[in-house]
Image 1 (cartoon, rainbow over the protein chains, first blue to last red):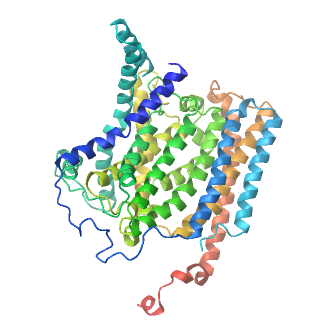
Image 2: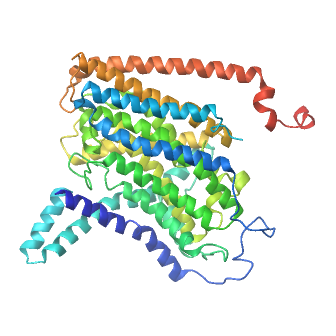
Image 3: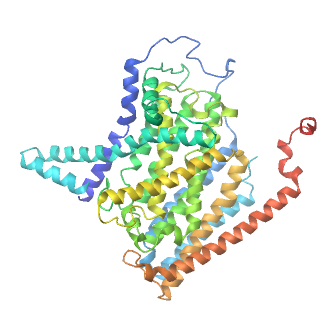
Length: 120
Length: 408
C-alpha cells in the first residue's frame, strides 16, 4: 500500500468511526418513548431550580494550567523528530536536543517559582 | 490486512469494476475488519469490568442473563435502546449530541494503527505514536464539550476539572512515550514492536512505563483520578444530563479506552505480539498481544477499585511537581546514557537487528540507572511523607474535621 492509500484508510476510518456509536443512538431514536414536559427537560440540579447563568467566568487557575500545558504540548511535538533521529544523530544534534529540553525544564521551574502550579 | 485489501482490490479490478470503487470497497472491508475488533471486545469488556469490580467488592456481579452473566451487556443494551432520551432545553443541541459520538469514535480510531500481529494491522503509519497522542486527546475534547454543552453547573464543574486534569497528565504521558520512540528510532508502532525483539522496553526503562501507566490511568479519568465524575460531589460530573444510549456511549468509550491503553502499553513496553512461537501462526501472535494487554488492563481495574479518590490540589501537585519533572529527568537520563554507550561503541545503534546477547550491556546499564533513579525517588517520597506526618496541622488544616466530630 502506498502512502496515499494509508491515509485513505485513516480517512475512511475517521468517517466510519462516528457511525458506529451513531447507529445505536439512531436505533434508540426510532424505538424510544417521547413524553417530554417542561420539568423533565429542565436543567437537573438535585431538585432545586437553577439560579443564574451556568456559563459563568471560571477560576483563573484552570486557565493557567491550560496555558502551561499548551506551552509544553507544542514544544513536545518538536522532540519527536529528535527522538526518531536519535540513533543516527551526531553529537551536535544530540546536544542541541538537550538544550531544548533544558529550556523546557527552565520554563517549568519558572512557573513553579511563580506559584503558577499551586492550586489556590 | 494489507494483502487482503490489495488482494480484494485486484479481484474486483479483474471482474471489471471501476478502479476507484474497487479501492474504496477494499478499504471499507479493511476498516470494518479492524474496527470490528474493538466493537466486539467492548461488549465483553463491560461484563469483565462489572465482574471484576464485583469480585473486589465481595459481590457476585452479573450472573443471571446467559452463562455466568455473559449476556448481561446485551440485555443492558436493549434496555438502554428503549429508554427515553432527554435533551435539556437549555443545552447546546449540536455539541450535546456530538460529544458522545466523538468520545466513542476517538477510541475506535486508535485501533487503526494498532498492530495485532506482524502482518495484520490497519495501517502502519510512519507517525503511529504521534497519531495515538493526537487521537486520544479527542476524547478529552469530547468530555469538555459534553460538560459545556449540558448547560448544567455540575457538568460544567466536571468539564473544568477535565481541562485541569486530563490536559495536565498528557504532558508526562507524551514524555514517557518519547522513550520507546527514542529507543526504537521510529514512531511506527510496528517498528517499535520489532525493535523489542532482543529486549522488552519495560526492562530498558521501567520508569517510563510507570509514568505512562499512571498518566494513562489519569487520561481515562479512572480512580484515583476520577474527579471529573466524582459522584459524591458532582453527582455524575460531565455526563449528568445524558440519558439513554448517549449515556451508554460515554461509558462504552471509557471502558474501551482503558483496554486500548492496556494494548498500547503492551505494544510500547511489553513487546506487543512477541512471545514464544509467535512466528508460527498469526493467531498465536494475536493471543500474545491480547494476553499482555489484558493483564495490564486487569491491573488498571484492580487499581481503580482499590485506591480512593484524590483531591484536585493533590492531583495537580503530583502531576506538575512530581510526574512532569520526573518524566523529563527520565528522558534525559535514558538518552544521555544510551548516547554515551553508543559513542563508546559498546552497544549496537540499531535495536531492530540486535540480539539478546548484544543488548545485554545496554540493558544492564540502563536498568542500573533506572534503579538508581527509583531508589532516589523513593528516598524523596519517604522524606516528604515523614514531614507530612510530623506536621499534620499544616498538611490537613483546611480539610480537618471539627474537634467535636473527631472526638467521637
